[in-house]
Image (cartoon, rainbow, N blue to C red; front, side, top):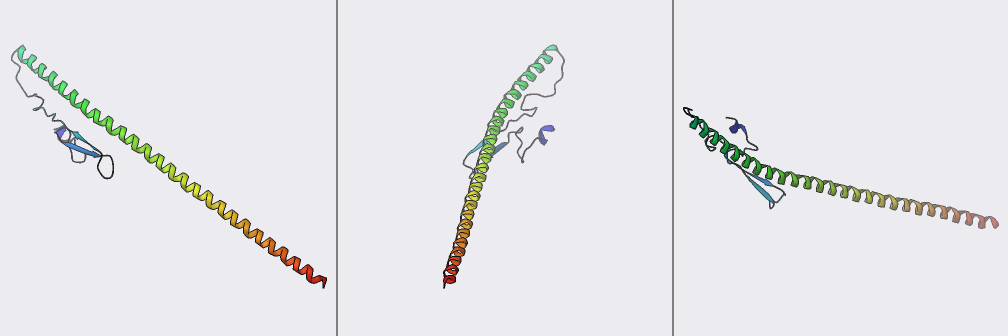
Length: 145
């Protein structure tokens, strides 16, 4: 039976399984996806003999009912899918925004540190130049004597 092979993470939504999807780390935000039983027995479909036109019509009516049940189940699962994909898109966008913000903070820190280093190098250069000038001035005074 194909339905028996239709499971996700050990949960078969086509045999009334329940899938719990957590949206955050502490599991406080989640959604429970309730599966439906779509076996032929549950849908009211079983092998019958067609002896009269009424038997054929009865089977067609049961097939129509089964089709309506399947459409309702598919619609419900589609709603869950829409909720989950919307939440996934939101989460991915949030992750991108947070990573971009972290990158900008790191870049801002690097720019600030570069400016600080340039300032220290400039101060060091000025100190070396002033020592050099002071040394030259003291040598000029000594030459006078």
